[in-house]
Length: 95
Length: 494
Image 1 (cartoon, rainbow over the protein chains, first blue to last red):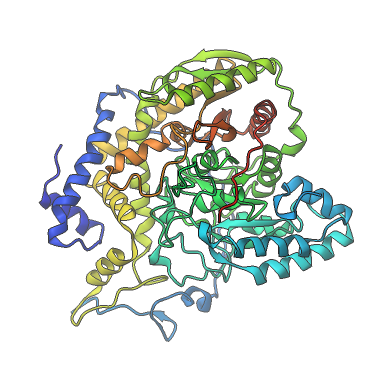
Image 2 (cartoon, chains in turn green, brown):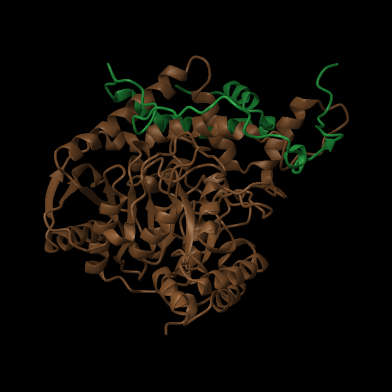
């Protein structure tokens, strides 16, 4: 499996990280090094093995379906880069 | 009495309880030491005012009697832990200016017991790194040096924690460990660090990297201190669905040093190619020490060991790409300056390009790739199956009666800052070759300083225990510590 510049561009887009066009070949090369390393996993016989989901068999706890938290608008907005009138503000999303 | 800054937690506790010293005195001495050690860059954010206020309150509580073990004990807190009102930015630009409105469960428990916070400790950005060099604050520096005086890494990701404990800038520190981030820096700085069983410490309020692997743990001068601090950090938390609802024993009370009849496994797959002779020799000496202490040594096999690192470098980036999706410039942290006409996608892309360092970007993108349509089964699901096999290897040797497993902690002693600059990322990942299996299997692992190499730099041995048996593991580590008799300290140059 080899990653080309187009794939690197697509992955950066999916990850929502801006990568300048001239940086893509180096990024693709790095991906190839890492994926080459990961490729060893193909040697392992995993026939019939269930993917591991947790380290200890444990049932998730349940709790009463009631409101346990809330009414903290100031705290929720305290670290926002741009908060206005009790809302998070972002650039225009729809034209 | 020993100089205040050099006290162990146990010695400080006893002296505080007897009224021989006050927490205000002790905290003052450590605040001064922290101020005099800027060259080590261990503390990213100092909090002397908070420390003084907490020390005063602790002294009141000590006078009233019946104070917990950590009452009045000054600690450093890794920057990954959210501390209410105090900068907590995971050594990343993207969380610049972030002031949590809440306190992590682990620090809540430490403060409940009266611990004093000296400040927030340097680390690799989002805990991704093995040398502290990915930090937005610049690298922490190892207080240990060889004769050539070259600046060395304290390891990573908990490099600031390790440097601070080794240089007497706190009596103990919190760390976190996703692939070796407590145990490798502990080994590089001649201190003790334990990663408990996954689920022992609540992850709530600890900035997430790879949620199925992340665990908090203490980094301390010795095994007894690790036992004391781990007990305070542990316990069930309804806010973390993966935290275990099982009792936390008094780990310190389990330190008898008696390991007669315990079975110690020596895994043959850990003799990796190119391992320095010194590491092999240290490992053999450690084996002999445990045998002399009455343990039974048994050669064991963990056949899937070589696939642990590749599996880790699928699973950890996959989880990271998902966890770090929250840094979008909307709710907290950095937002890029936008150009005329930029929409929300440009805001995300520019914010994340400016806010994340190169290693974090690389791992997010690798994670995005292995989770993308068409590759999910080939990479991610396969890695999770291999992870199940790695865990099964351990389950089998434990079922056959092995109590603990002895391995080296790292493949070398501390290397120079910048020495890996031109190496490809995989070379850096190899630092975690002995530690990463433990995270994948969710087991407890501890690094104990066991000797010096030919350059005079510390080396550590790792013990791996059965799940939930940290008490027994700490006791084996205690026996190893007593036999190794490691007392060296770095000569002060900073």
